[in-house]
Image (cartoon, rainbow, N blue to C red; front, side):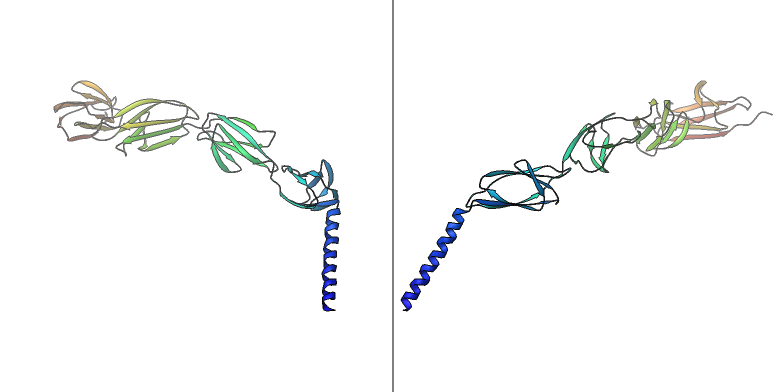
Length: 308
């Protein structure tokens, strides 16, 4: 009795399994379930619109399908799916990528800093890639002494050339040793290292002076948008004579030779006695003798007497 009941149960189980296998074997359709980020993307099956994500497309015959997922300002996601009796169901989850574009950036002058949305990308000329298409982008091109170039860019406006507009002049004077006096057109302006912007365009006489060193003198031409650097290595001298007067601008004669006007520094005199004469209209002439010794400074400050 027990053996018969057991036989019946085993036989019934075999029948159920066989029916299930037959049902799977006889299944003729399948499904494709599709989701995406972001959602609400359009779904196309073999080019035919089926709806928006998330979506499940059912009752599909077994074969190969092409699934395309589209969303505005994102790249299309495309995947081929083959449904079979052994693989009747497929799930697709697509993380969509933003559409991007590139821009070519150049400028005159070159080597200007390029910023996209406030982030430094490099120097001109430059190609910037992988720019998200759907967002607003601001391009800035910056260079010292020039106005900042600023423009909105997109996938259509992607070839940018900036003719930079100069806004100022820039003069830099350095010396070794530093802390030397700097004169522009004989007017004292500061000590090295010295920097000045916004001078008028044109030619300037630059002097760099320091006690016990030979005076440097040279001409520079300043133009808007350009930086002019004057780097001076001062040459030490064994002789240093400084002559000043009140008032200044007095003619200075040493041993009968006109040397210039006060204030003046002399570094080429020979050792020994020299005759100094100062001459200025409206004032009594001044004359004295001074002695030059190597490695000793001679500093003369003279008050002239005005004629009655």
